[in-house]
Image 1 (cartoon, rainbow, N blue to C red):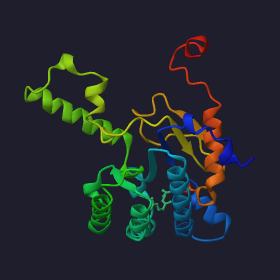
Image 2 (image 1 turned 135 degrees about the horizontal axis):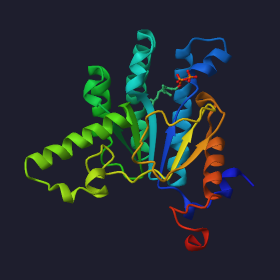
Image 3 (image 1 turned 135 degrees about the vertical axis):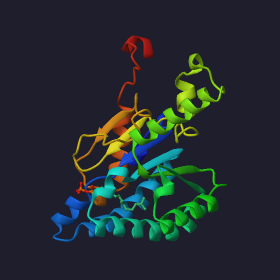
Amino acid sequence: MDLKDQIDIDKLPKHIAIIMDGNGRWAKQHGRPRVFGHRNGVKAVRETTEAAAELGIEYLTLYAFSTENWNRPKFEVNALMTLLVETIRKEVETLNKNNIRLNAIGDIDKLPTKSRDALLEAIENTKTNTRMTLVLALNYSAKWEIIEAVKDIAHQVKTDNLAIDQINEDVFKSALSTRNIPDPEFLIRTSGETRISNFLLWQIAYSELYFTPVFWPDFRKNHFYQAILDFQNRERRFGMTSEQVN
Ligand code: FPP
């Protein structure tokens, strides 16, 4: 039986987040510059988005550029930004055809103007789509997001719009950039690294984590299905006992 057919569509995670990693090492393996890896990573983005939408996943979040990525060589940062603009512009039509809405989390205002404009335009042009939301984490870091949320809440308290005793998980969640998105039940990282790298720290408190040695440019639909099957074989206990959840 195909991997896809083994998936129980009644037990799908609503939200899957992915740390796309290994572009550089994949390029090195092929004796090519790192940017070649990023270019080939776009095919994996396309395949994974298509697979997720076909299955009925509601939210797919991709870690495309972290705040720490600015520390890479200028040439690589510029190439990534250009690739992003090109890809977003090129894919809007396909997103609309497939009824997929684009969204973004991160410090978008600090992106180069061209990248930000392409992104905002694509978000606007896909905003009525309902099948799946594709969230790009761009210039994103979880610590940045948490500090922004703290500032927002502090401001609400200072202006007498919130009492300190009213601060709870819901209030905090509503101050995060993911306020309208359910927490991911499942997080995938490619390339064999087993770190979180400042991604969605609040939101993954109870996420199942999955690490695959496959480099991102090689990641295909079957790898995605394999990951979901692994997720479906796990028992999510949320601090309770096995007997309680069954
Ligand atoms: C990690 O590999 C990958 C990135 C930092 C960028 C991901 C970007 C893309 C796949 C291109 C376009 C994406 C979209 C959403 C349009 P790495 O460079 O850290 O690899 P390494 O760890 O092997 O060096």
